[in-house]
Length: 351
Image 1 (cartoon, rainbow, N blue to C red):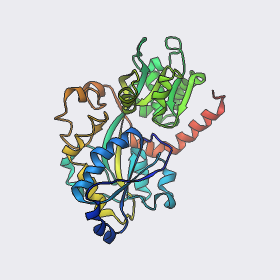
Image 2: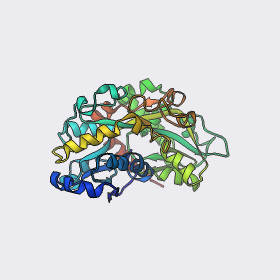
Image 3: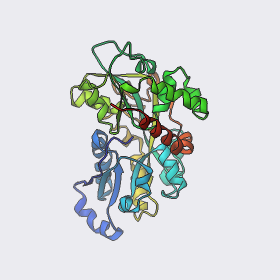
Image 4: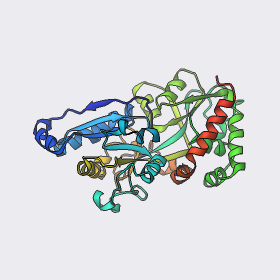
């Protein structure tokens, strides 16, 4: 879920730092955690990072990044990283390439602490979020992805995330392909051609975004009528910026991010302690009320009030009919489809 193009570094201040300093010097450099920045990392700081410091007395540095295998493969970029939040396809690729530490379930308290699928060979799932159809309230509300491609009923620009991933799935959903048939279709030349034809049908209206903050801004400014957006970014814009934006949950693309430990991190044991701490159901339960993402600790959502649950992508009504992003598919096909997408994008005039 990469919403930012900047790499920054921040030392979190907390009361136990003075007590922790001798221990930190003995163990080497401070533990460094890398996430996506923006409103999401602001929440992580309050409900995960600072509580971890208070509970353990360990110093914690945080950085932000925008994702990408090129960053994970760059030793100069990752030299001081210990823990990084990654999307599912990059988690698989980086694990295969030996860039990440293997994590045993017992190191994190066992699989029973987590929802199914949260723990993988190199990752500990931390959030579930939706790519949703977002719009300005006050007019006719769209019903689903077919409306995203209907320039007659909904004239104006369209904002989509730059890249093949999510874009091709949405194109097929809009063209009437059932969620369970999307990835089988994308494995076939005919299915890919169908997706690109659908995109071509609205090419002049398309505006591409790279940062998660862009869709709510583009909607609020009237630059686009409809947008593909992270559900949490739309919620943050409404709460913090008094935007009046709506979400269509039907057909959302549901994704899971994970924590991973960089290979040969000198802070492996402290990194595992961090993952155990943030994998606790009580700790995770503090996140959804601040930003509406689902969490992965078993039982963490059980005690949340209805007014919080209704805004989560994992809520039963919101998740009904969702397409779960297939990380295994993108692990196998990402490079090839990104090349084709880039060729298509560069083939015609862009607004």
